[in-house]
Length: 269
Image 1: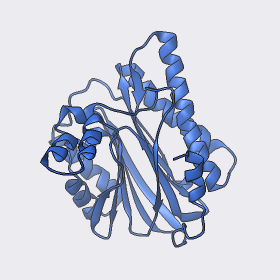
Image 2: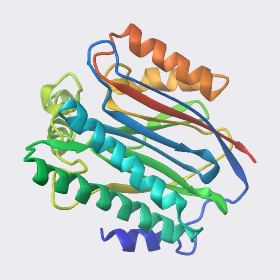
Image 3: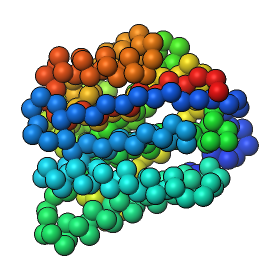
Image 4: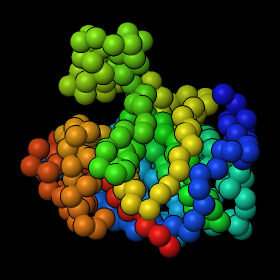
């Protein structure tokens, strides 16, 4: 779908969620884990502006870290601009990803680097009508939602394994291909910087008081299942408690990769 047509669809009659002022309470953690020598993840947490993002760099240590950091830098530039309508902010978020893509590719060409890029996942709400929002992602960084006791994965990994598994529709073979234990599930089909054009998936979301969200890199969801994510989000009393519980369980699971997570709890403003 043309991204600008998608942005416009948010504003069609009947598309809005019930309105009401909401607040995001958030906490985050990022660490290199127990195996990796450095941390190539980055994150951006701006709850007052209803904008959260995580990114997981790929390539050599310093290059991967640069790629993920540049995504967050481009998002920061977006948030520093004068206030605009939510429609414009959505378009500018897409433009920020495109700018990071161009920046990474220029750096690769200048340095003769063959592999460099980053995943990205972002969650944003309309600051004026906070029940209305959107998520976007590229790669295998994920966004989960816990609502009324049910945990749901809101994103779909852009990996060879996941896409082959979905092509089969169902059955044991499909689930095996999509499993993160399958090596194909770690081969990205999309990332920021790996193609001439970045291709994020966008999705409309509505926010409700009581919702809980997790944005995370694969260092979290490779260790914890969706059921475990749901359990941890549901049990925590605060976002900080949730972050501590996630970090504890990822470390207990061996923390084989960098792990970064943002927990956001939605409440009445």
